[in-house]
Image (cartoon, one colour):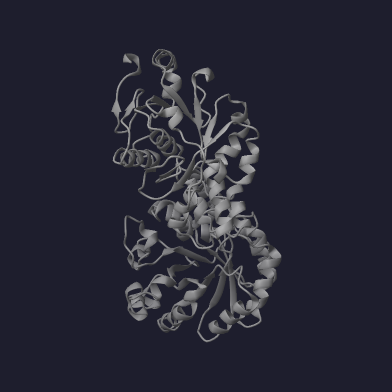
Length: 535
């Protein structure tokens, strides 16, 4: 029978979706399923000193909490800590004393793993000596090593040799590795490190299990997995598959029924709700070495459309996205930075005119007849966002669009629509310009700068690349006398898109030169509102 330890870290890695708030009932059922499936080690969660916002029990995984959960016989219980807390301004020994007030013999946990970036490794390694002296098994999980050189990896392995680690792990953090790359990195480690090796794989490319099995062939003896692959982004190797492979290698019987029942009752409904698992976005992120949290955050935020997600991935492919940064995500979502370029002035069309701005909300179609009567009667300049087509085409004067990926997706439609298109044409990628063919395009430039609206003759500066901000800037630069808005219904009260739009409208209304805005179809935004039926 081979000596392999299967470590399930579902409640630790999966907690990124539900703030580590797993119920006691689920945990108990989960632990029984792990015992039945011949899982050796269960990592119940993190242990941390940070307490910001509500997080459930598996974010802290205290001894007191674990004692309240009945641990089946034969399961080793572990927790993970972040090396960033070990190399903070608080002395390392003080951090460890606060995290682990009890020695191992007085604690329900036996294993402590340290999640560690390469730059934290050397300074955090002394923690292993402290933990071993108190009776704990110790593992170190090195993250983001897939793109490290042979010399760098061997140097890390030599450092580890100076400390009493029970297992040295590496994680395929970006999910970008192939089985052959996995084997190569392992051989580099093993040339300098003679202790036990472990691997934690991610499933961006659908290779998490394949990489894990290849690692076993190469001599790894600790392997990670999670139930249904639950974990950040595309998730991990799936426990329900890995235990089958390991049982075959061990020639040892197991009972998979409790695990499959657990999946049906708890984890499949959660997966349907939270959406972990690989897809084309994660595949691209893995292919380009982009941190999967970027994709996870965008897929969980309804402000990001399909074109937003693809555009951000493409942006990060160029500028680099191995380390997750919320600021980088915000920047990537806004595609126009730096000097604005344009050559068309809207004044000739807009000066002295009232403008009707047609949004994409259902209010346009619902009140179509009244809006068309108003257009025919009052003759405002009618500007439609993107490909809004609920109003008869002959009543629309201009269209406005600025999102490069959205333009690329809509290029066939734009070429067929009769109205000129206002867009930052000279700033668009060549592929997008070519996709528009011989479309009549009016080139009005834009740049994105936080909290700023500025209206110049042939370009604007706006706080976001949302098309409504661009349209308002065009109308204002053109010296229109007022703006009526239709089809800006809004979203649900808790939808972040509503907050974003409300903040945008408030910023516009306080900008120098801003025009009076009047909504004439129902809206949830704080706008002056009149009825199209009375105009």
